[in-house]
Length: 103
Image (cartoon, rainbow, N blue to C red; front, side):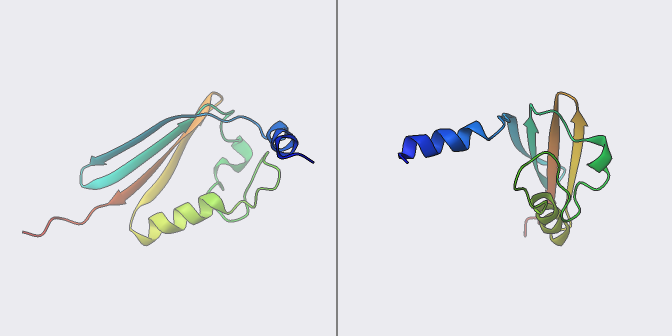
């Protein structure tokens, strides 16, 4: 099978999800990274478990580990990961406190 056919076949099975914005800022001594997308939002039935291991919805082949790993990294650095979701997309905010400058 030609490479172009393989790429087309793979692309035909992937739903398009546009990362609309990525923002990075330092706010009150913490690095804050926000990602917003244009997808259908987080299903209500998994919203409260979203950052637990093996929670997934609507993605073929997903393991449900990605957001659990992000949460673990945030926790290890005394940070947080949050999500706000609507039917028009979701915004994830990762907040990691930064060390105070030595002086």
